[in-house]
Length: 190
Image 1 (cartoon, helix red, strand yellow):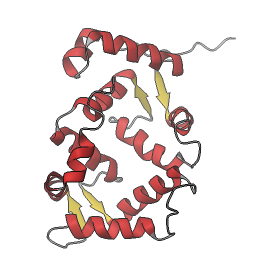
Image 2 (cartoon, helix red, strand yellow):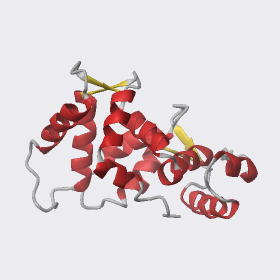
Image 3 (tube, one colour):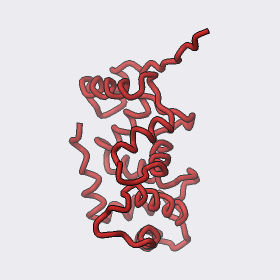
Image 4 (cartoon, helix red, strand yellow):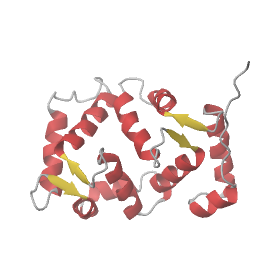
């Protein structure tokens, strides 16, 4: 007996066009690429990690890809549909500063309790440093992720209670010129 492959059919492109910040033509291009990598119409975490690792061959992107996958998997069902993917990309590439900051906060808030702890931020920072690999220049010190977290908390934990709330995160990011510049880097990618 042959197993039937369950295929996910995307919502009508018109609906996605209305919900996202992409044109119908852009959605068609995205869909072709998505279907090429994920013929079933959805991808799981393992597939996402395999695809993502191709962008960072010099490092280990496994852990960061895990965090990123969870940010795209908004309904936490273990898979990302074309719609989930498009909505995430729409925010990252074309969203308002507020939408991008909310998305970033959600990425850093690993356990989704509404706060970023030093442990969560350290997990993310270690994952980023692992992903960049040992071949960075200048060579990074072993304690660089922890130093980054300490700097982050000094800036963002306004009331010094050991956690960063969404309001503290957004307010601090909006006051930081470098963060604001980086928010606009990918606006015209597609």
